[in-house]
Length: 275
Length: 237
Image 1 (cartoon, rainbow over the protein chains, first blue to last red):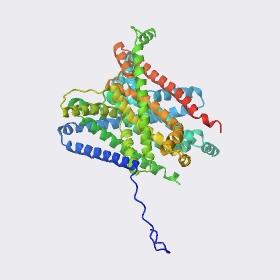
Image 2: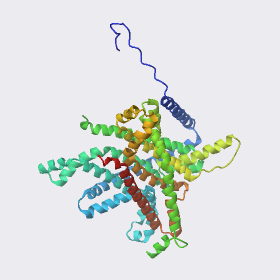
Image 3: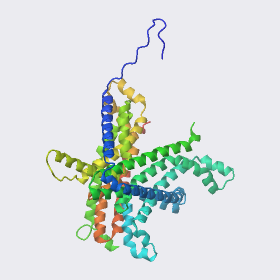
Image 4: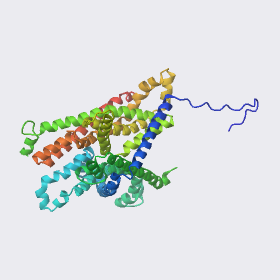
């Protein structure tokens, strides 16, 4: 608070009221619309919480949710394992390594995940005799394995690019410093470079996880009953549109929770870098 | 090999014309979505960049929703939601008609919603890259707020946002494949039909993937030309 003017004894005038500009009116109208739709959504869901639809399909949704988590978790893990050699090959100065890695990454990032999934799931049928001969037909016959296979290859390409960028982002002095200390190149890479690179890569990794969760809905098209698959099944049996609304709410909760948790993790892990 | 070429040829024997038709649908869907997505994204970025808190919040709610939902789910929400909404509306005024939403339009709407929420982020970070002095210079010359935005800020904004928007265009091109699920005869769907009839799934889905790659390459080449064009002014410095 500013004291009264000593000579005149006048107090400072209060700040003028904020004008109702066009922007302010528009903002309030839009917010009112969001709040009304939010309240009606909550009301709609609350009034349906004891409906036969929820009673009948809730267990299915939970199963689907778990399947989605499994697909995403397994694919991300396999992708992470594959991405390291791909990123290294991509950074290599040997063209026999760098070019195939570049081609791999370009293919999987340049084509839709849906087309990749179809290519593997339906395309494997073309090579049935060959696959049977090597005993892999049982693997490619199952939609589940095909989806995991396709998603892993896809996310490996994206993760390799994240990792490559992060590794290139580590200053050259780190390599030189480690070399000056007499560390071998593998030790330098795993103990000096990779930890710093992963730190930089945290945010893009978080985005990749979210993209994977969203992308995993595609599995429902090749007969996998993940969250999206169960939703489509529930809708096709009941013709009740709330099937999709519940799915939307669930996906939003998953993605938002993950985003916030990941932000916290990132803040925690990079707290030594904050100045 | 010769069989494959026959299958891919144009005319009675091959599926070339079917696939070409699918490519046309895919490309036209992406091109039709782009202007709506860009415009909506720009408006949302304006809202996010304003100093009015309620407007910023409203815009952030929008992006949170459409960046959090899987694209496939957004598509179904639009496709079935609009259909049911219109049927309910018709029932209210006494018509009991079956109404089906055109899958092209549904795809356009859903993809525009998703594209605009990502594009708004691209525009917003471009807004952050424009110094305050540009606005002040515009006002000092006597330009109105609208003129300053259109003549001074927007040309610089496009240059700054172009790399991110280029990426979003490539993503959009890939996301159009999802519309095949609601029955639009796009590249993936036509390839699927050809694969089922000829029993050559690997060939046709492989071709579909390669065509997507080709489209991405053409787009990248085009985008880098546009980028060079926007940077023409930089050379003089």
